[in-house]
Length: 335
Image (cartoon, rainbow, N blue to C red; front, side):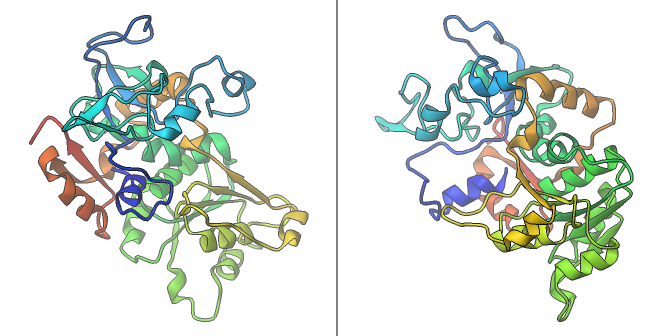
């Protein structure tokens, strides 16, 4: 259960629309398929993809991005590619969410919005690969392609941030600094491979940028914002090393928020980048992540701190607000 769902549910998202079936991180079994669907069949185990992959559009064919444009317009409006909704309650249409609507025992998605995975992988774990873990891990391994021996700072040690750490470890980063205002996240960071921890609220007059520059002999090679806070995004960029430092924006800021920095930060060689779903192509690359999980190369189980049945979904949203919750799995098979 990612924070994006909670943000929309809160009513604070000016782009949010209701009534809607939320949820965009999940896994399940194909119950039936529509006419002409050939890439999945009934009985397949699948992970839902809020970032689809048609392999036919300009984006998919470019080889430069994992974004897909085929159903973007209708997905953004909360309907299926044909412009209709497949959900109803008391005779009224309900909107789809991010093309997946996983907070339901049954959902209807476009064929390009799921990927088949091995039936040996437990769905109450692989569901996490539908967003958080893949997003952070891919940001480090694909988007930034962290170099061996480099130093990295990760702002925000939730599921996405811890996944960035895991990706940085995989690529051989030598120093991985975890930045979080919750001291309890220090142990979590080290569990996934972090080497250092900084709480920016305990630095006195020293800024987090100055602290990180001090710790890395002039600045970080890579920084990752996993908070969605535009002020943190600026700090992450300015903590980068002059000449080559890259800052990757992963966290999604509230609608209408803008980022800013002095142009000199960019003129002197720092790079600001962003990514969705970690730059991972869902149908092409996600099965490899599942294989890595099954062979012990990718941590997944370790992220699960809470579980709730479907009937406890509102409690799950409360669990998310707790400082000790990394990921709460909601089992739609249990009421």
